[in-house]
Amino acid sequence: MSLPTLDRVLDAVLRIDTNFDIKFVSEAGQRWLVQLLGADIPANFIDILHPKDIERFKDVLHDSPESFSCDLRVIKGSGECWVNLRSYQLTGVHQYVICIIDISVWKANDSAFRHAAEHDDLTGLPNRAFLKNAVDALIQENTPAFSIALLDLDGFKKVNDTFGHAMGDAVLVETTRRLVKIIGPQDVLARLGGDEFVVLFSDKSAIGAQEALANVLLAVARPYDTAPHNAYLGVSVGVAQYPSHGQDYSTVLKNADTAMYFSKNAGKNRISIYTPTDVSVDFSIKAAIHNGIQEGEFYMDYQPQYDIQRNLIGAEALMRWKSRDFGNVPPDKFIPIAEESGLMPFLGKWALRYSCHQLRRFQEWMPDFVMSVNVSPVQFGSDGFDTLVLDAIEETGIDPSRLILEITESTLMQSQERTERALGNLRERGVRFSIDDFGTGFSSLAYLTRLPVSSIKIDKAFVRAIQDERKASQSDRKLITAMINLAHSIDLKVVAEGVENEAQFAFLEGAGCNLIQGYLLGKPMSAVAISSLPGLTRGVAA
Ligand code: C2E
Ligand code: CA
Ligand code: CA
Image (cartoon, rainbow, N blue to C red; front, side, top):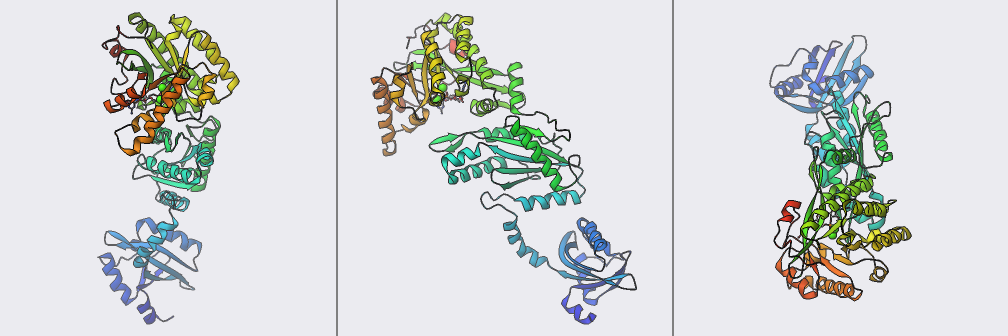
């Protein structure tokens, strides 16, 4: 190995002693280093290395003193320059020969390959390899605390099985889009594979990550448009933090996984923080809903319903949640969570009693006022639902024939015997039923003839499609007309919801629709606002 030759091949050759003091620098190396550093060559080799790589250099030298090769960064002005560094121990003199090649050009080209190796094809998110590097880097940089949240979607398998893998992929891409908006630029959102995501909170403890994670729960709870039906998913989250829950990448990740399983087992759709004793803390939306009911954060709005002559006949009660922690949360977000977490019977009972009390007041002004109350399939399927309704009627003294329970087609599909018994019991006492979101499920009208249902509510998706005379809406118009005719043929009334403009109203009127609900005639409003609507006392019964 003759130095003149090396001098031409390599950017710098140095000799250092065990204290890293520089004993020799090749001629080309002197020129290269001075240019690179923008300053004189320091006396100690460590001062050439980039601060982030000093420890690594010392480690590898310690581990393989005889010889080693590694890529690391040296100082370049106020920035950095990637070099390949080889070190050979000189026996006898306790010194090392260090050979350096500037590899910054290769690194730049390499970064495209690196990007491909470290990212997920489907979502473009960083993958497991990237995550590990990012965590290792945080540990090397002596970051005092960070946390890892493992996210596993609830109900994803069902989407794949029901709608196929292409739709499953679309749901993962959509989930990514929602999560990216929540995760800050200093944090890393990665996909581990399947329906597993990870968030690396680079400077937050597990508690500090709560706010972002609560938003993650809400974002995933929004319905997914998996035409022809929406899909509802949840997410189980487990969080572990460095260094108290683990000193390295794999331990922290493993403990986040343990906490995630805790979330799954505790009923899904929640956040659990790893605790070495396995007692995880419940920061879930479920807990917030539970507290919210007690704290009076829930209330009802009422959306007026009109007959086709535009006389007020009643209203639909719609639940609202003004949460101290989450702000105004729409029912499309919190009801699926309440359903999945077993809180729906509790919440639904509250809504039903509240609405009956309000109906009692409305009936004082307008005896024929009709109140429609939504009943979730989960609630209808729970034991003693009919007794609960009858108790509410008795407690408030309302006329049961003025109460309409809006149920969905999926309610009718579940455990038919029990459902039919409850329906029958309630019908006997005069309570009426309406099929909500009609046309989006699978129920056949023939089946409806056997049930004590008094009306159907055409889903607003159909009403939205009646815009103008354009051809695209022709089939929807025909479908609506057919639904109305069929319903009338078995003595069911037809309600249209989501009526937003006069064109829709005119079409529905022409098609023989009986009742109209929508922004055109009235948005959901407070009970006080309902009571001052014109026509309240002139209303005609449905
Ligand atoms: P839904 O039963 O289909 O209720 C009608 C939804 O359409 C309401 O949304 C209402 O605000 C909205 N809407 C009314 N008119 C128009 C319109 O002209 N255009 C458009 N684009 N939308 C209109 P909201 O209040 O967000 O409720 C969403 C869903 O949450 C309800 O859909 C219902 O499924 C559920 N929900 C609400 N309250 C309760 C409740 O007390 N119990 C149960 N089980 N579910 C409820
Ligand atoms: Ca409804
Ligand atoms: Ca509806």
